[in-house]
Length: 151
Ligand SMILES: [Zn+2]
Image (tube, rainbow, N blue to C red; front, side, top):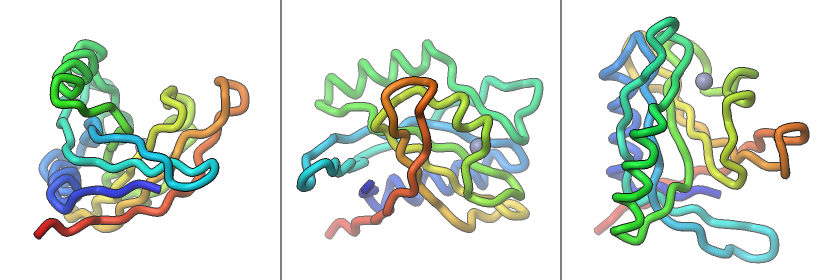
């Protein structure tokens, strides 16, 4: 299960609207907590926007610059935050993962959040957790998404 702060949720959906008709992408920062047996709760406190480095096919592919990722990870650690997932948008496609999304996902236990953006407007936001132990048995599992309101 993943919990997003209201501001993180709004911000990642807005990012998808801004980059339409191209895919946006970014990193989810927060913490992992035990949530009962074999259940991990991920809480997202902030997002880090990334530029989409895919110039060949930015409308249906995304890729995060590894140097961006290292910089984001370092800055997060200084604030006591971990990378708990990634997000991207699907311009004029459903908020479901694609075979390419699975092939390019490598962070086990992390969340992959996808927002469908139809005609420039963010519609659905779904989250999938990457489970398994290696590249051969990895799979995406539907994950409950909660948005927490802050007072
Ligand atoms: Zn995708």
